[in-house]
Image (cartoon, rainbow, N blue to C red):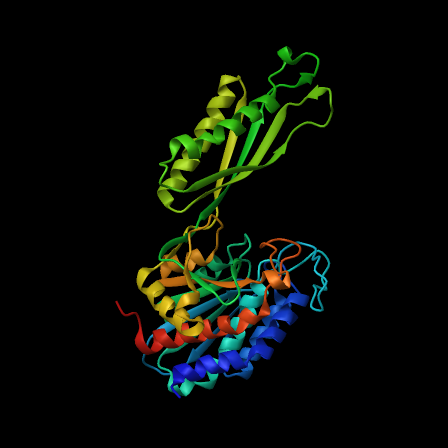
Length: 398
C-alpha cells in the first residue's frame, strides 16, 4: 500500500478519535482570545506525538512544528479555535456546557480534524520530506487572530511556502468538498454613521433638524451604491444593520446612529463602496442642514485562492471523496481571516460539506441550532493530512 493510500485509510479509521475531539471542544467552547482550555488540550497532544510546540502566540494560539527532514518544502495547515456568544438550543449529548457560548460556526470541528491529522503526519514523519507547521489560531470571529499569528512569526523560521485551510459548510451535503480558484470569500468592513441634527417637540417638526428623517434618507440612498454605482458584473454588499435614535414617542432627538457592513470580492470595489458611503451620508445630511460623522473600519481582506494551490487541492479532494463529490462553488460575501495568510503565502481554502437533511442538520452558521454531520469529519482529517503530504512530496504542478 502506498503512503498516500495509507494516510487516507488511517484518516477514515480514526473516526472515533476525531468525533471525540470535536465533542470535547464543542462542550467547552471559548470566545476569542480566551481559548485556554482548547489550547492546552491541543498543545499536550502535539507534545505527546513529538511536535515542537510553541504556545502563547497571539495570546492563546498554538504552533506545532513537525520537522520531517532538514531539506524539503515547508507547508502550513490552519484551524481556528474560537466560539461565538450564542446560547445553544440543540438537545444533544455534547451540548455546550458554557452558558451563552457555543461553537456555532464549526471551529470545534476544524480544530479536531487538524489535531487528528497531526497524529497521522507524526506517525509518518520518517517518510516525509520537509516541514509541516500546524497553526491553531484564536479569534477568527472578528478578532483578526490570523493577522496577529502572522505578525508574531508563524509563517517564518522556516518560511512557509504553501498554506491550506478548510471550513465546514452547511450549505453543502456531507461528503462533498467545495473549491474555487480566485476570490472565494469577501473582504469585510464596518461603517458607523452619526447624524447630528437639532431636536425638539414632535408636534413642531418644522423647528427641528430631524436626524431620524435624515437617517431614513441615508439608508435608502445607500442602497443605490450597489444598484447604481457598481458595475453590474461586480459583487458588493452594503447593509445597515443597526439604527438607534430617540427615547420618547413625542420628542425628536438630537442624534441618530447607523451601523452596518460593507463587503466586496476585490479591493477596487471595496474602495468604491467606502467612498460612496461617505459621500452619500455627508451630502444627504448637508442637504438637511445637519452634521454627519462617518467612520469606516476595514475588517479582513478578500479570501483569494491561488490557482496552483487550488488545482492541487482539487486533486487531493477528488482522491478523498471522489471527483463527483468535488463541487465548483460560487463566491459568498462572508469573510474569513484566513485571507491574511493568503496575502503572504500561496494557498487555498476549502469548503467541507456537513449538511444532512435526513438527520435534521440544516441550521445555518451562527445559528443557535447549528450542528454538523460528524460523518464528514474523517474526510476533513484526510484532506488536511494529504494536502500536507502532496505539497511536501510534489509541490505545485502546473
